[in-house]
Image (cartoon, rainbow, N blue to C red; front, side, top):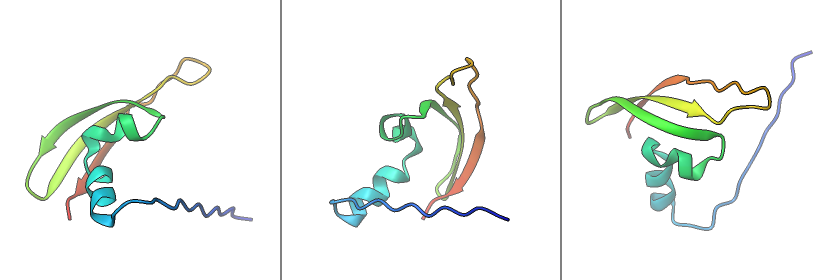
Length: 72
C-alpha cells in the first residue's frame, strides 16, 4: 500500500509577500529550520541553481542536495 500525507499551513500575510519570500532561496535558512546554509551556484533572470546544506541529524550526518528552480 502506498502512503500519502497532505499538509496545509494558513499564513496571515499578503500573497505577494509570501510568494517573494518563499521564492528567494537565500532566505530559506531563516524560514525553514532544517536548512543550515544555501549556496547559489548559478543565477539567471528566470532560474536559480542552488545547494542546500541541512543541519546535522542525530547521527551527525548532513545532506547537501542540489536544486534548480524556475522563477515565476
